[in-house]
Image (cartoon, rainbow, N blue to C red; front, top):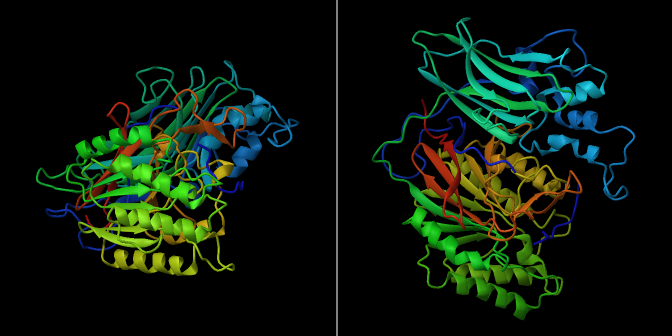
Length: 547
């Protein structure tokens, strides 16, 4: 189902990626039981501000792009673009395959300065890379103080294309001692990458610290004798791990689905049954937009009929209150006014217990704050993107309030921000002025978990969730999570590297989420509606707890 917003500019996912959030207050974040000691960042190796802390060791004669290189992400793309080849999708069809950048542009979780070992670019710039002239390059962290920790976690964003015989490895050395390998990428199926590419992934590696060790040095080694492919790294940090959950910890459970759009109605029964099984006793069902298909020529009668179809699919299921966000398909008609369509959305939401009057609102669910954002009807012309100044002020006030209370807060909006979750690198998802404004506000708060739909990109992908650091925001960023969809799945376009298309090899991959909020963490799990199996999981530390 095509997404109707103005255009402006598969590898299986690794289970259980965890994101770091620093403490902001001492209050508990919901759930029951006593708060556990929280997670703490020991060192941030983000290349935007810490490139000088790293060193690079490359065998042979140094040359531009031969071995690890610090570069602005967009400069990397520009450097890798082919010379003398037309890559304008509007004028140069079909595009030359060289325009596709070997998937470099799919590093959706990257921003700003990154570290890249790119043999393809090095060879294009004149470096000889072959069996007689292999590249062996190591990116070396400074000595990170451990502060008497018994265990630590290395976390980093990783974008790796497996070249023949290429090897990527990460090691740790304590107090200047011998290196111990803690991760290996290679063509072997037994490697951490299973012999495949790692597309916009996040690695979380728990490391036991020897008794008495005071410092740790991490090394990222890349070796290859082929003039192709690369390894790109961003957002490196060292943190303390969360303790195991207490056996008596009881979470506040929430259910999440998105993007039914009528097309997903055949999967709705199965989705609701799955959610009830995996999140029994849930306090709410969060519906992240695109309730209906909303044809462009839909009349009031047709739009009300589509809402009735969704209601009919919900009938017969024992549901908690349903709290929806408004999606682009819910306000898509060119026959009805925006306000008429907003009113239809509000009416439907209240039939299922939302008790709202407008598309932006707040609910506290079992002690867990939920802030919902969305397009409005009668926004003054001098305000932006159908999000009023009043809604922006509401967001600012509520996030400040919950931060002061020490609460972890869910923010739900239909649209993702660019360069966050799967697919958001594409032209289709470029932020507008109001999007930048909203993300700048959210980026100040590491206690925010931002839920977005709209993309229809599958939670099977490694970047279904991301830790996003906003320029000028909190140094630990916020958490972005893609809620998936019940309607048709999307994936990279075969015709344009900056576009997307329906995933024709698997057009139906409906997915839902559960959210479990404990005192010291929130655990979000993604499930495949067709198989009933869990396909991904992320654990987000609660910044209200202290270590």
